[in-house]
Every structure is written in C-alpha cells, then in structure tokens.
Length: 82
Image (cartoon, rainbow, N blue to C red):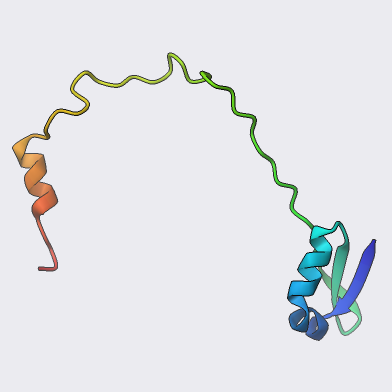
C-alpha cells in the first residue's frame, strides 16, 4: 500500500510513518506536491552461520599469550597529553 504525505506531515509524524513502513507500507514524501523521497522497509539479511566453517583458516601462534617485549610495553605507557 502506498501513502503520500507532505514534508511537514512527515516531520510531525515520523514515528507513526516508520511504524507503517515496518508493517509493509510504502510512504512517499512530497514537497509542493512533487514526490522527493520514498520511505521503504529495509530487508534485514542475516548470513547463515555454519559452525566450523573457519576450520583450518585461522592460526594461533604458540606464544599468543606470552608477555610482550619490554619496548612494546613501554610504547603503551607513553602519554602524549600528560
């Protein structure tokens, strides 16, 4: 279903118009009687998750949780604005 409103009405009733769009309606916003915009629902696309699909694609180093070298730790402790 198509609904036409002017800019003032759209600004005044935006929440109501969004609720109608969520219900599947399409809203045309017009300025001086000429259509300038269309409000339509966004179809949410959800990717199907497949457990184990990244198997063999990731590598975690043996020293992943080892302490950082002293020179790198010192860089974290520097403060330019102190």
